[in-house]
Image 1 (cartoon, one colour):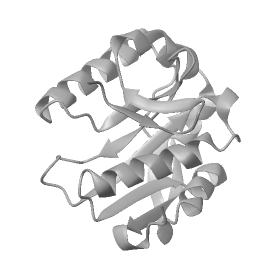
Image 2 (cartoon, one colour; image 1 turned 60 degrees about the vertical axis):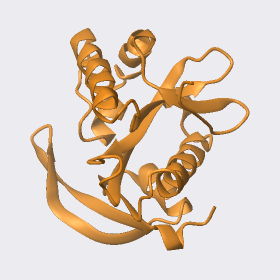
Image 3 (cartoon, helix red, strand yellow; image 1 turned 180 degrees about the horizontal axis):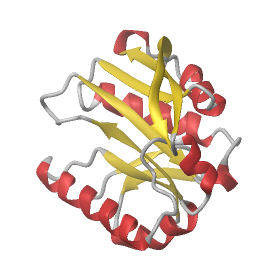
Length: 184
């Protein structure tokens, strides 16, 4: 059975597949997504999409068929509208992981990412036995900070001039959430 987590009646989380390639290219051509994330290249190319999909297929195989990076999808047509997943997680060995995420611009400010983070963090704590989930965002990315805080993440520090992007240095915010502090 394929992996699936329900966000709400309209959106879900499931495994990344080759069928998502055009949606990645379509959504990640938006420069503002690049500007607000650390690792999404710009311009986003077909080769970038190929690498990302192949990377996740291989990573899933290496984790015994269990994925740790997923697509956020519109349920009615299974169209990819974003991504979410855990970094630095080895299933069955890691007690902590960093969560990363992005959402296509037409879906911003609708509460989708707040709900998606809650669902994925709950899965991490309940099914992957994580004890701690962390997240970082650029200090200027107020929307990302807000969705973390709505999910109970606590600001643990400011990472001064921690990130270099497009030739400029930026402060980051470092958030953490412990399993015992998570409100389901």
